[in-house]
Length: 307
Image 1: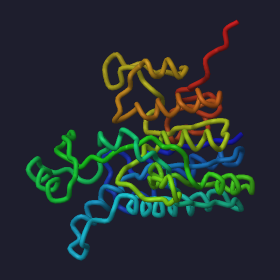
Image 2: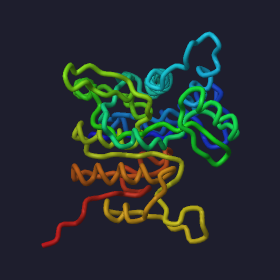
Image 3: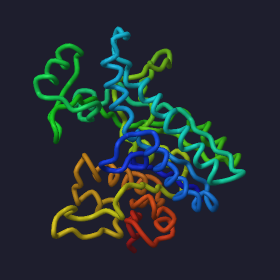
Image 4: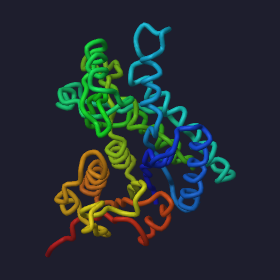
């Protein structure tokens, strides 16, 4: 079975942990252990969030006095893909002796006319006071918005059209390679209609929606979205909280999960199942093997045919 695994940012940094290299390495080792059993039985393509890295890198770049301008987001995304991809590749190499593992820096095509470019919503970078954020917005042309702890920069999050390196991923899979790609949603690029030339854009593509698009293009059998909760919950965090163990795409969408947490994961699972007829599931990293075998997580399945 061909499985695309969408690994949440908590793989590198659990809630409340410091973004130290040793902490990240320990968490990556946990990822390798969790996925090794699946990789021995199935074809795996691993996508991942950018963990804690893009925000600090953006802040470091913005504060670097040797730079005439901060490093653009597309290049920061490429840096985080390389950093996290290297950590994952070496850990999986050690956990799966003899298995070929490759980490690719990949690019995600988005539409230049995507309405998201007029409605920036994705938080990046550090938290600021309102006055500091407003000053930075004037100085650098940023859009800002209030976050839970203060004010932050927001950037567009356009919908992914396709991963440009999908054919390369196909070839690697056919050769038995475990592929790591589309980190952080991939480097967002637009294509010139006349020349086909690619240009990076100041945006961040949702990693789960990118994983769903990639899984569709790869003709995957299963999309596995791993996070830090055992399954999807109704009324999460309230006394009425109830697990959702099985749902169709329509049922999942009707629950109206928030954009900042479970919403994109639910939408990614729903899109993949609707468009392919395959299966998707959402659950905890440490239960990855159990989720695929139907013993944990939330299963998202096609609508049952009616006669």
